[in-house]
Amino acid sequence: MANSTVTSYAEALFAIAAAEGDLNAVEEELFQFAQAFRSNNELSSTLADQTVPVSGRQQVVEDLLNGKASATTTALVSMLVGAGRAAELPAIVEALVERSAASRNKDVATVRSVVDLTADQKDRLATAINIRTGKAVEIKVVIDPTVLGGAVTQIGDEIIDGSVRRRLNQLRESFR
Image (cartoon, rainbow, N blue to C red; front, side, top):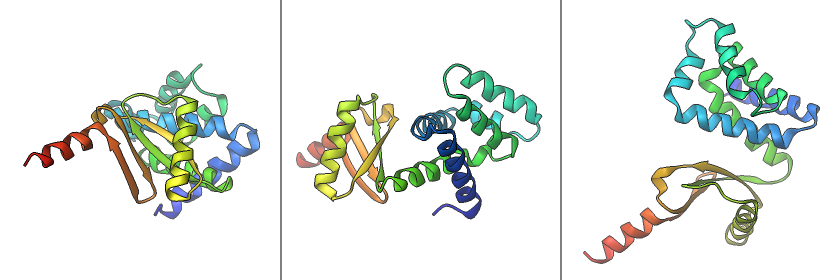
């Protein structure tokens, strides 16, 4: 469960993105930025380093996102960094994504895969998850080279492991 500060920031970001009229695009851009932030120690430590002037940290954000994200997304990330909330950015974005999906009466299914999924693959996976769990979901893909192949899907606390790694482990166990 997210703490009240994280929830408050997520609600504020949601309201701003919705007011700007590009909620889906901003949500996806923030999600992708949060994934990059999580996977890049240099980026996360730089943006969270309180000894680096705020203007310098915000310039890093603007340089990284210039031409790759909307002005709204850039401003929101810059605002979080300026407010000293960079370390909480992934949690804030996760809460925003959940809030956004809930506004459409859906749950979030985070899919870890070695490659990005096409729109058709996401649609088929969402349909399969709906059939299996009875939940309407929005698919968020996290590129994870440790998966090897297949995908690992998490919906709340439920994990559906369709990875090659799991299948190899099952095969290994069957030979013992």
